[in-house]
Length: 544
Image (cartoon, rainbow, N blue to C red; front, side):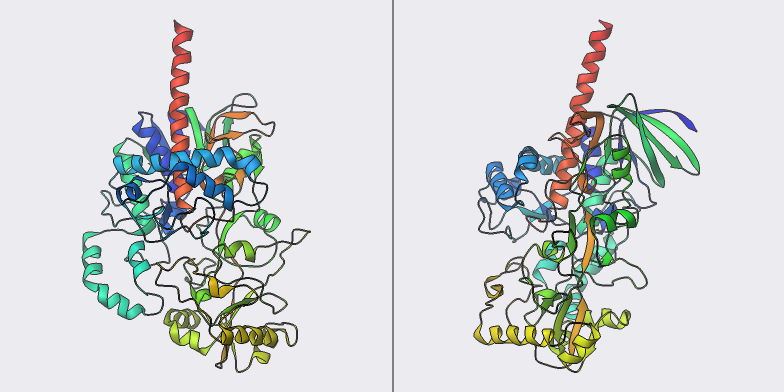
């Protein structure tokens, strides 16, 4: 085993949280090494749409949209699951205060530029919610270096802002043709959009600040001094085990554990459809932190949605699916009954609802619709053609129910009740007629109520699709990982999907994966700078 190498800060992972921490520490003058397990940089962030929730940001201020960290804290408190405030409030306070500083810092020290979207907080009218100003996305960016970014099944030509204001889902050919000159120009210039732009901009900024990157470097474990101090890591690269000392500390930002079958089944029993994150999100960070004595929490929390088989033969898919927002579509559980408002923002929490034994209440779940949905959604027809057997179809609801092994008569009764609501224009069961889904600003969403009555009838699996789990080592408000005895593990920090995330499955906006994760990376970087200063002062006093 080779060793002897040192750095100030070692970051495990290369997604948004990891790069935010690396940039903050490097700009502050620390030597930073980033270890990435795969051959690709960017993690789940590079695969994402780039939506970023940042309260009280300077773009909103410039646009005359009033907001404050206190209002953001009020919103976080009001939207949180019952009982969470006791353990998470100090972290919410740090997030609300540091998020606007994070965004300003990233724009100051990289070529990344963000712009507001027209979206509002979806949990309106909770206290502290805003109708616009907190949702942003990166503008297209031409990277300075040819970074090898994590590939994604989602097209990268359109920016997040363009997707909001177009209707690629229902009119893909017309949308592409109208945008063709702009898209060709973007491709010729090598511009990136969405999460790829975000990662490339952060990578450029990190490199300019002196960060070093090593890919295909799998961290095997943490190096410790005593029971409460982390001094570095042991990792494997090019067939050789190596050790490196991190003088100030280590940041775990290695993503979730959704690809660890044993952990996933333990914390998320029952069926799932797809995993939409990199296969390297296999819980390495959670395991090494637990081995060092860290307290794990929120292991049953995850970013969950519906999925489509975007890559044939691969158990992963893009999460940006909107066919459940169609007027003639409902979700039914294993009993053939509707169980939720299909337009509710935190639909993943409804899909993952548990009984007293911790088992799924509703799974397996099916989306039920009719021939008109297929006519309106050519992309849905394309995925059906590319993945035979994924979408089920029958001439009658009774035949469809038999295919799905649903109780006799249940599906027919659920559809009949929904159709009756459509005739009245009022959803008596779940008040869907009052819902605006993610907001009127998003043109991809149809909404409304329309009867399911045109054969053939269709069913699509709508179980959990994982973007990322959100459980891991518990941290304090500085990002410092806590030992099981409640004391900090000196020199160990955690951010992003690897941490016990203070915003769990119940998100507060579409961008509450990226925005808070970037902020926690920034907080960890700031804490490492403070630790460096304290260690330097301690060494000075010892030699005085």
